[in-house]
Length: 301
Ligand code: MN
Ligand code: MN
Image (tube, rainbow, N blue to C red; front, side, top):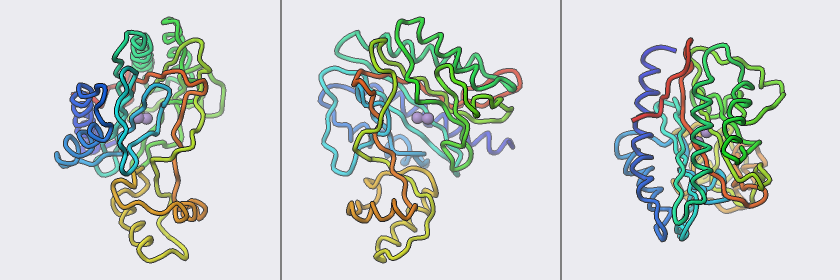
């Protein structure tokens, strides 16, 4: 990777880390999710001249990933809970991805947050060029279980390439044996690492919920669509290519049109992911650059 590209990653990562640190302080009972969303997406990313890599994900308790404020969202933070803020910034399609967790109202979520953060640190310490991704899973699981809690088994870190948030290689947070788990990290790879934790008594995996808040385009070419739909899809493609977006950023389309776009394989929807036994979940995530002797954190202030 050339120096110019690396510089874009570090700039995007710095904007992102700064935004999340500021936004984290604002999570309080009664505050509307849309306020934090606008703070991150508009005030701390767009107004500084950058673009979100995806809509801000806000996961409260068992809501683990892929919830982002839908158009008109009036939801507020509850009296107590563990809240995951997961955001991204991209420059010319070079994406950074980071998440922080906040527990409030009680101490009982603290162990989940500490275990997720320790798991992330273990992953960072384990990675260098030549290490297999499955070795990370073994080490992260060991660290997380030493806190008496468990990792979410079916969520993982991911390789990122230009305009591709999930570029085909996963970094497990548990011991696994599958085809891609023998991938060896390469110098110059950009990965998001993201352990999730829940209580020992929980199911320990996520399932799809009914709601879809986040979409991405697979291709731009529509068939037999009203001209305003075709225009909107072209506009989104111009701004996002294959990066995820919320219809809150554009105008909402009727469900029937969304269904047609999905069946034509133009649009992909990401269902909200929920811990299968409805137990609370914490998350820690950073983006790293793999080097010969270790790895460097990209998402830092
Ligand atoms: Mn993320
Ligand atoms: Mn991620």
